[in-house]
Length: 530
Image (cartoon, rainbow, N blue to C red):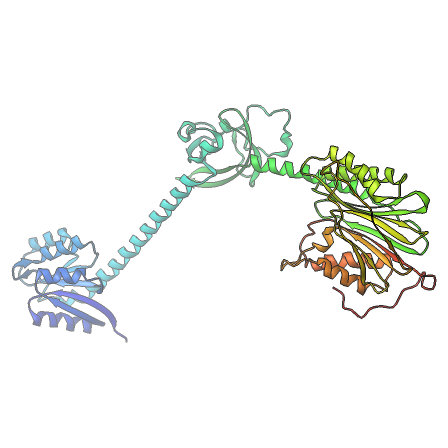
């Protein structure tokens, strides 16, 4: 059988006696590692040597210049718990008893060492038990310190009550949550923290009770209810209970969090959501139900609103002399305000377009009115293109909006209708001037769009960009205006790689159809789609 390792410090001036002890330990099944010392200084040095972990100390009683009790005192002063067994041949029973009272763990006679191995086994076992108990006690103390630290520093109010809901203990956070000094509520019923009267503007059915028949409703899961501060103000709290027994009596720990600010934020969010729903509904009702019928033209328009509705707008404006206006605009901001401004802008443009075919005249008049209605944070970018079917020509004004494109039958951009004026609503005296004319070939097309398309962004932070937009025009040259537009909006959506849509995406596509190709598709391009 494999021998057990054993580190032994022997305090003995007789080398022969030390050898006897080592031999007995080896016969008892140990593989002792032994250090023998003779002086008190050497003994103290060996005990304090942190590189050596002693399992047991065997000490003669009488040594030159000192006795075993002095060594025992040195061991106790070190604070280490090492079994200390006295082995001597010449002391009386009274002396042995005094040594045991002083802290020695056992006493053996040198002539009767049959008990040596059992005594060593017993003392090592008890020493290990003491070590385990100390570790358990220290772990318990650490746990208690941690629990106290959590209790004292928790931002949530923590209250301990008995079965009758009488408060036994409260943490400092009670003062922040309820306004009471924690000592002032000890001994009082927890109902002191409940409203005396529910205000008429609060729907109590939304909240659960804390107590039932003056006792804690401890069987409820965590829930929201109403609390009352010391100043009688009502707060919304989230509360949960844990039950445990102390001395056979039930107690309840209440964990209480003031969620008034969160509930106000949720209410505000619901209000915003309702505003955005109304804004989106207004916005959708502003869009044309169908495109106009213009000989030789295939026309499509669409808008995909973002989750938080913005102020995108597109329309077809009927003008004098059979002319038509195509407009895409973008009101800054989100919600009902921009939606109402969009409705206002639409009404002005439709009214003014009945009397003029000049985009400049229309926008000059609209800008004067809008500038009075918009605050300094609001403005409207817009592009208005007037098309004359008799001359197949266009004139336009671009008021700070992304450029529109005139493109050929293959989808290549011939002309970009770049901004030639500032956004609407900034200064009432801003002059707008018509640009053009540009004559369209029978198979030329026109595209107007909002910045939500080219600014669609993916996970890498890349934008869909004007380059990809122009690439799509070339790729979709053989498609109808409706299919080309739907494909563009889908391509921009897929480009986001699952990220939420940050802004409305709106566009109008007009494609010319020569008599030979009217109602049919043109040759497709081999260019790869974006």
